[in-house]
Length: 322
Ligand SMILES: [Cu+2]
Picture 1 (cartoon, rainbow, N blue to C red):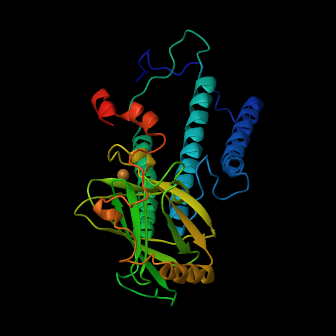
Picture 2: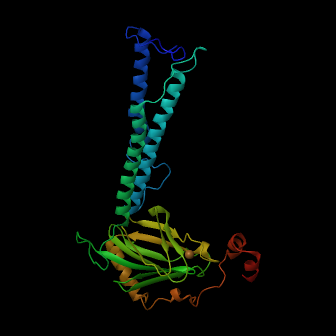
Picture 3: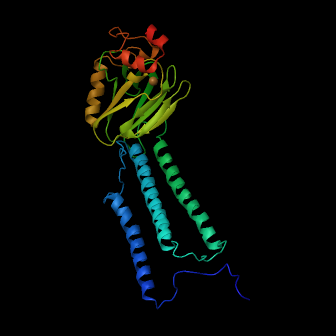
């Protein structure tokens, strides 16, 4: 039975294996695909297993895990996106219109349909798997009230209380209390949480009034401080250094000045610091009661740059009353 006149292969590439131009084209194609598959990840990685793509590598064990997930997803996306782009370009060039004759007509191709359904499902499953793995690692905590980790390392328990507008850090096991408010003076960078590098810090995060955000850019980390909700998480700061943090939920007039920092020191320097704080009277009971919104005696009521922050964030009525 003769083929319908419209369904004829015209101008299709020659399948003749003796045609030398076919060997050249397929050889070039294989070379390009091999170069892409082998070269692209190496080029992207720059010999680094986790290229940053502008992100922070994370100053904590948890932040580092988050970073690796981000980096891995970006690399996966770029490789797959690049592969798809090359396939599209190749198709456009290889099967471009060469004459007015009708090309080969067909519909449905079961193997290809199964392939392009299964491959994205596998890719999504792959990304989902690593996301869950990373979430579990970041959210993993030592048992509450544990004084040492399973490997015998000390756990430093710190209750962080967010309030309008400042932070209080209570080292429950060490009887140290650190408190800082936005109204403590110009260029005030807020209270500083001192922690030992390399050890597990278990933070119990609560709020005294409204929703605040505990955020540290260098840690790739953010958690809500919500009234009535207790968030517990562990941080393992990898190296010594100082890391800036801030509130990331608009929580009122001086939200923009609700700053704090974490200073990571060696474990022995941490012990020295803690005993000096106790000697200085910065204890759980001795520190000013910032969490009750009572300003310490040496505070001003208006931050130095309140004018600019009020102008940008408050209504004219609020501005007038401030
Ligand atoms: Cu806040």
